[in-house]
Image (cartoon, rainbow, N blue to C red; front, top):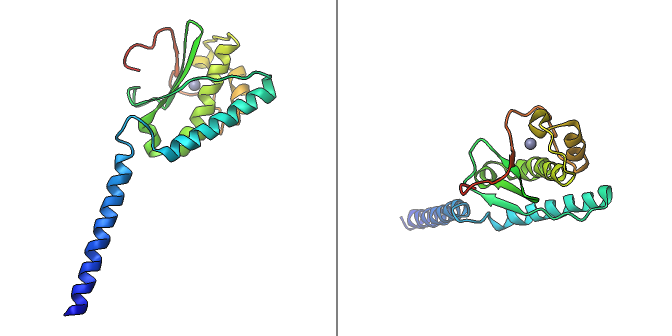
Length: 163
Ligand SMILES: [Zn+2]
């Protein structure tokens, strides 16, 4: 009888610990900011991309990267240009499904759009996914620099308050 009670107590304690762990992990996505370990990975990738730009273009570029949960769900990220101000906005909700994809695919993709803005190349070809864009995306070590994307992830002019 005593043994059964002990096992029962251990099972209860383990369940409470597990529940606490699960709700901690869920809550990490509730606030304004991304979980700290994802922020760190994102920063590392950002520095790596900036280093590649210095090496390949001899330019020290620093584009603000904004994490937002207000951009449309079908967009992973976007690059915006307004009066010489360039921004990259990444969809916070998409990090929860796949931080790997956001960091290694989406960030270089959007950084390549930002570089096109810096070069004042505002082409409409394939919604901005021209050969030149692809070349830059590959140079920034984008995992998949697909020119034939269905979405339009470039915003010219005011972004509006929803972003
Ligand atoms: Zn794009």
